[in-house]
Length: 532
Image (cartoon, rainbow, N blue to C red; front, top):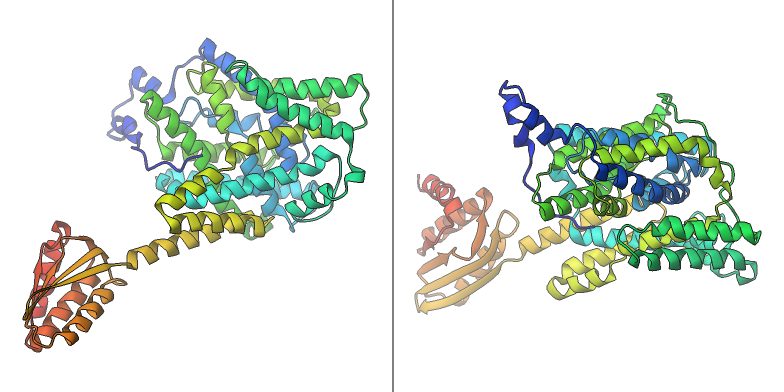
């Protein structure tokens, strides 16, 4: 996942309608895509459906939900999102990162997998959806970029380690009641006598096939083949391993009965998921829009993901997002428009009455699917690269990673910690103003500051100059060259004006040179005010 720079908004496409001019059929197609799905949309939508089956089951377990809810999360969310997305390739549904955030947010509020847990998950999806809809309607797409790259890299790396840790017990066949992810993983690994050899074999086989078969062909469904192979082996050899178990075959129904009294308990995690979980679909849309020279809109994508989460909430499932892996498959399989997501959702809806055939799928195989997806999020290489160009930024990434692991299961708090830390690092760097002072002659000093001059950094210049003047009692002129100043705000201009007037009263002339163009009028007005 990449926290991309702010893209150009594509809302100007709709400009004629705001001026009271009806959109032509061609303009409607430009905004909404083809009126009918192309063959490529059917092929791509069905291909994504095949991958979504094992992933949906696995990500539901990761979120602490009954496994069948992962399938339901792949029905109406992608269908609803298809009517709003600006990217024709974005596939919406359950994702690993969002599932982990859901599990962390609900920990301590209800028992994992219970009816209360499920209801709170649906309420969380509704709140995430409303947050995203608000961001989109208010045209606050820029909010998706409030999470800096170091924070995002550190968080996703830590989250990927936690995601992997959640599946250790399933793969080795050992259960643990520890509330912390790494605690459960450690307990499972520290009792080798309890390990289930068959489960380990199926987990490793699924993982190896998932990774290895990706090289066969870009459209080869490696995940479904890997899980299917392990499933068949477990049935043929009657292996004693944990399986998914009962899967209800009822079609999803809409319900508005949610525990609204718990809204305040979920406010912070909902806001975090709304922002952090949006970075992935934003990156997907931005990547393909750049590669194919197409328009896209962060505001429109907020609307699509918001509507998808509202649909998830009303059908009793948990928060969803855009999947990079499934979106990539969607594009490679030949998707031409947003109809491919619609096809995926409808196909899953048709499959639900027959989903009980999956009840004997080994949990170890699903665990391997989750681990294979999480590995791409581990970016120690990127953190190491940051050290070469910015040690403070690299330290921010490491600190966020450590906070993610340390605050488990409330990893949403780790994001807040990272954001606060990144802001603090930014302010610290903004305060750092380098001041070069040279002696022109016995009576003149040349002061050259470099950096940003604002209310917290100007004092550094004043103190440095005063200290130098104290060492040179014969100085009668100070020339302050602002050519190296990137920005000058009102308070900084006022502080420098005060300094100039104080020195003038002490018999020292202060002159300013190369005032930045953007601040010239402001600076001159402040000095003029002081002269009155």
